[in-house]
Length: 105
Image 1: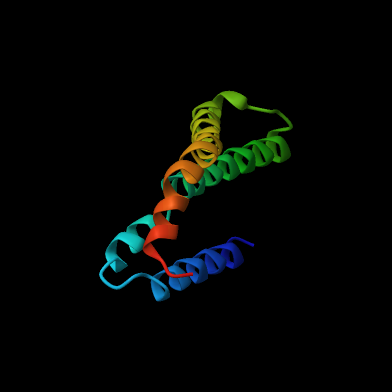
Image 2: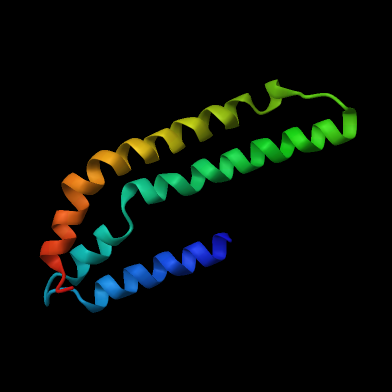
């Protein structure tokens, strides 16, 4: 599923670059992958690793050792929360208007 979503995002970036206003290609490339999308990836990776470690510990030792993964869970929650907050504020106020101005779609 991750590969499909990554390909979808790469297609989106490619289409933005294809329709970039002449001379604005570099700016469009920099704005194509918004910061909240970049924060989302390590957030969900940390969450997946933490939950996997919990499952392995539960299967092997029949105990839930949350202390081992507490820091990974904190990082995951912070990054995923930042993703939602930035997507709700920065996306509409900053990224979309700039990309609309810099592309001819």
